Image (cartoon, rainbow, N blue to C red; front, top):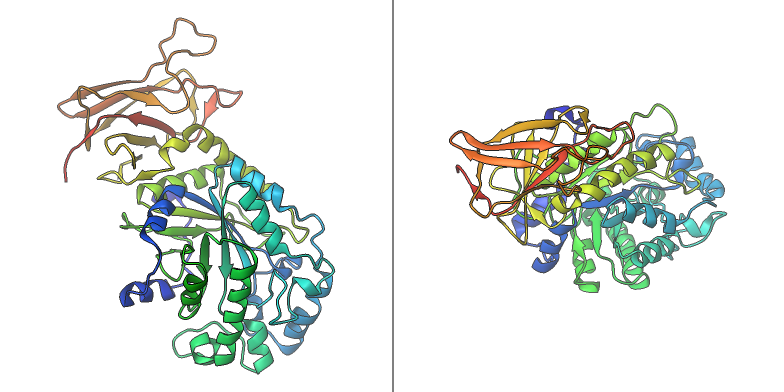
Length: 441
């Protein structure tokens, strides 16, 4: 499965996450970290004023000429008016489709704040819309019972431009004054914004610090000790998955297409099957998946993105038991069969039968697994189906079967549930096996 998934170059080198781990500065509460591992799936939301022109979020300012920068900072706020923004609909979609939390871009690298602030005029308060988008988001996702997270960039191109410092993100050999720890005014600016975010909007469950985290995460933990800092304190690989299981909590961040923010043309999206396979691989390796949407400038999640998410939601409606509150099995996979185990019942194993092509309802397939062994108490089921009835075939036996033999555990599985009208299902089937024993190292 891993080879079939698109792999883009990582944008970041884990910046502050690894540094924090080395220096022992991680102050995320252990119980919050463990609970985070149960969540499995989060919705990343990249949205800012440059969604109006469909460009990469913020980064088009790097190396831009003065005319472009001036129009970005002065003109784009004058036309940003997302009159169709309804975070209650966002939250309803997220909850229906199996997301357990969300992370919203309160301030990206451009410095534009999606909340009213005393630190700058470059904010939502000085647009035709003028409403507090952050408050509306926080209230809607909290009301839906979902975890509510913020994204914050310590980089601030608006302030750098005001200071006369060439706009850039830091790379070795570059101007260190783009970093808050090397730019006292930038640090003061950021800390004032963090204080606003952490004193106005109630409890913030998660914070994703996309840049140098020193100083910022410390204030966050001082203001709200229960906040779990993801990037800036734990591993958050971007647009790639690790080769093997990663101990402890971690979170992979992926776009639906090629761009984080709304891209109206020249975009190519992953399929629903890609997303499902990506989620399976992430969970088999012990991580969470933070999957991004990029709303249109009007505030609506594009239809192309919504329908892909709904395919993922359908699959999770059937198979969510194997995704939430699970941990890695002693092996990640056997060929196209991936594994998780229940966090509460460690001998309950879920086997994900991937890359099976279009599986016709009523047809059986056989599998042999060598890294787990049945016991006298083992029971088998296919998630979503009771194993008793095949529609319109009263004499058929759709029950899943297993037998333990010298060469391994043999599975005989029928796809019996009609999920699509044409009785074909192209996404992974999940087999639940209880009272299992590991085989091998």
